[in-house]
Amino acid sequence: MKKSVLIILLILLSRSFIHSQYSAYNADHSFRYFATPGFVNITEFNGAAGLFDHEGPGESSQDSESLNSVYYFGVTNVFGYQIDRNFFAGIGVGFFHYKLDNLFPFYLEYKYSMYMKRFTLYFYGDGGALVKPDPDQFSDESKIYLNPGFGISRTITPKTEISLSAGYMVQARTTISRVSFLNFKLGLTYRRNAFRMFRNL
Image (tube, rainbow, N blue to C red; front, side):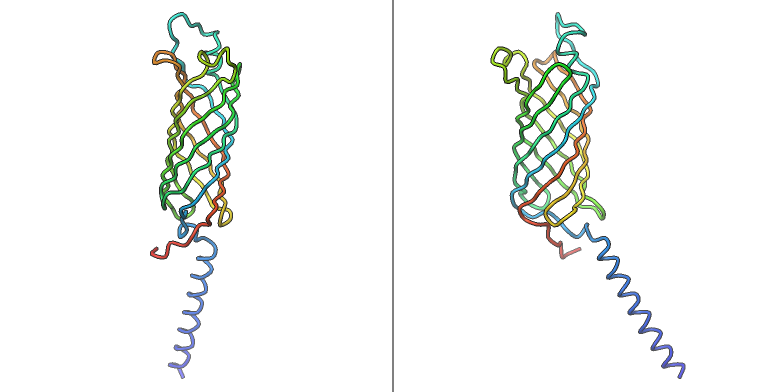
């Protein structure tokens, strides 16, 4: 009799354990998914605070370059391709509003992703040009820039995810005239191909 009771208890405990494991898997298994190769679209809202500027000869703290180093905000869109589980590359365009000016970024973006249990950690590098569309000011006001940074993302559906990132941006017209920003991005990513299960975990 005692043996039968013990067997029944073991069966009940094993079923309970299996059920709890299954429930935990259903509740949080994001780390088992990873991006598959395919086209990706990323839309991001951008905001930045100026850190410091390097004035060139004859420039004052009240010229347009210095005043435009205070802040900027805007929106960008990157269309690219997920090369493999970790690497992404794309081409981006957007709109940035500064204190005294508006510039349009055209750039390349590279991203490396690391899949964690509850989110994805990634490192990115953007580089390109900030274009002033006015023909009279195109050569004087357009700039080049670099923007490395890191962020986290979280899947919300098999094909979409949200992200938040921070980076350091340097914008320059010459080697002695440049401004720096601490920038943040809040993004929404849509993937043509859904995330898939990494079976080996």
